[in-house]
Image 1 (cartoon, protein in one colour):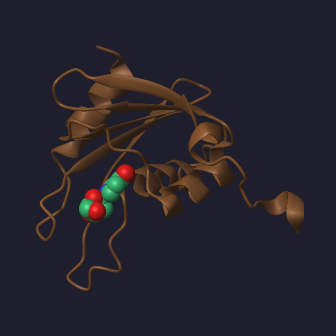
Image 2 (image 1 turned 90 degrees about the vertical axis):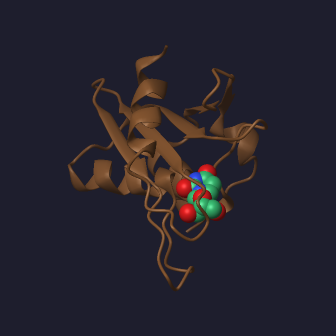
Length: 127
Ligand code: THU
């Protein structure tokens, strides 16, 4: 199994999802090969919940990482779970058109470019 998917699968075990019981793991690979992981962290107010992908990006950025190659997202769904709209925006901002690997617990995987999921982004080029 791809090590990046394995890392996402492993960190998914740390998901704090008592409200939805929908656990997600994400693993973001830096251009130096380092893997930055994240799981979803829910909150009783619901709206303060942060997705696995954003946790991975913010952890990586706060450690000084700035260039990324790929992200793997793992959830327990037959139809592979893609990043939500907010995560697509954040991924575009920090990672550009990276490879997004979706995977489930049964070995199903799919690889996309972020641009396919987020075709006409708003970003700093408009400011
Ligand atoms: N979630 C993620 O962490 N990533 C996704 O790609 C989709 C949704 C989380 C947010 C929330 O904790 C739960 O899954 C249900 O929406």
